Length: 188
Image (tube, rainbow, N blue to C red; front, side):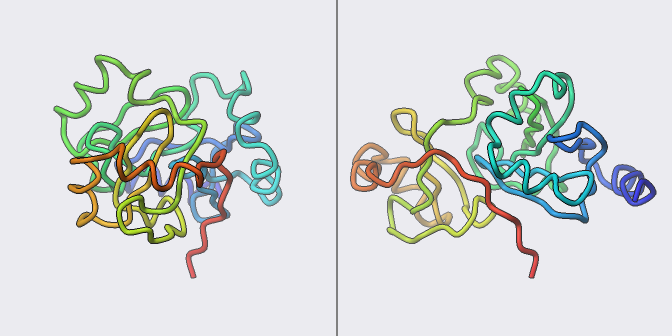
């Protein structure tokens, strides 16, 4: 298992992650969980279930201080979905690694990481423009924050409409805002 982790770290430009439960090196080919727009991997069987029980509490653990516990699935500046392997730069804030589609976006983030890197306490996984249910953070194309709620957007075609009149679109789905929950990543 350690060989797989080392190989993954050497073959990718992604920062290495630790298991948020144990603080040990994460196995990216094992169970993974999406939570609040970020991807988390674990060191061994059972840690994914422990994490799913109360992700917010586990992520607040002092043993994670200074460690990369998860990787965000979006560029926090452009708000667009971004595969880590396509990122031009990375920054870490509060244990989450954020990928950027450009060095300019990273520079913007670095000026005020709290503004871009603080994850919301409420989210909506229904596109506020089309009304389409978004199965997972991984399947969203982008997000837009409106009054403290993160609304995930289904496709690039809906993004311009949301950007043009975010409050109008969000209002029709505000009642669907929920506390973020852990979702198992199914690669099947």
